[in-house]
Image (cartoon, rainbow, N blue to C red):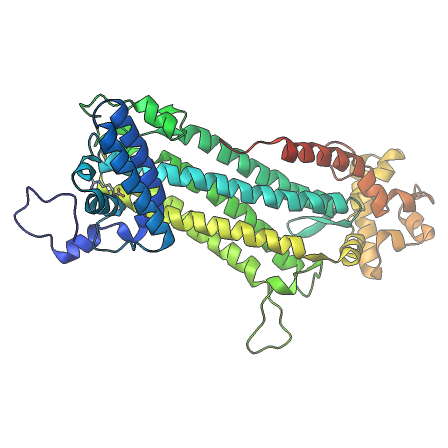
Length: 463
Ligand code: ARG
């Protein structure tokens, strides 16, 4: 058991207590960030004359060596250390001796862990953002290729009005675009450096916190040392943003599962993204979409868990906060995996355009447009609604679509109908006439695609 403390203790820690308290099994995930933070701290201590240049050089090369060996797999991180901070410091002292004992001057594990976690999540926010961008590229391509792929739009999972596949994909484009904007906001708000806050009340050393903040590419140092070690808002915001990403992915997956069902057959998931059954040879299951939908619960769970952990903690640092790590790491890994898998699945999916179009034709999705036709010929809308309602009832009896009726049949319900009704309620007309921005008409969609394309190409990465 290697610990950074023990002077004031007369007994060894109970083994169970040690294990319960230790965080090395999971905080080793930010070994790199811990070392980068220590390097910045040491450079600052030397600049301020708190360490000599020689001590600084010794510590820096010791730390570099540890990181190199850990990443090469020649130095194992074992559970004989309480946490990653103890592991690095103990190894440093083993390697360089006395100078290593000065690393922790003017620092506490409280500001150290706050820094490590921020550095780790700040990087991961960028990774998630890249993955979302790749997904948006795929969606935009599908939009560009499907401006006239007609399909039913649904409300209450009942066919409502005709739309296009481009329009449907465009809805998800907007969702994931907002998700990226949320990440950008979080990034900006979290990008302040807690290092130098000490345990809770700063230190008596003349630290230069602006310098460490700058070395670690933060906007500036944080402004209250108590808040710096006790703040986990940025993790809660990130978990919330990740929960929203999962909610969007889950809704999309639900639609893919429905569309891929034997009854719908709007799409076919590629063999590479489907799985079989051990007993039913005919099965090709959408397991990936189901798993993404299922994993949403884990990420929501992490958000609620951390909110609950934080709600009763007095200032400043308390050990409860160690609980932030496993769940945040798990949520990040889950979200990254799900976005990458989803992108692969949607990129390779086959759209059955004919089936989609046929479905739009068969479900009275042009009933509103038929009512509008009557309105355009002087019938008040409420009456037109009633007439088309009757017409739909007649069609259901005859098992026909509105545009499959003869003009005589139409006229029997309303004499206002003329030959031009057929063109007025064709799928093409129904969609083409919806020309306001945001609607599925091809001109409106082309304008949206232009805007989204410019958004994707203009953007610079988060920083
Ligand atoms: N493992 C701890 C955590 O994750 C590091 C900070 C420990 N600080 C302390 N005062 N015990 O929160």
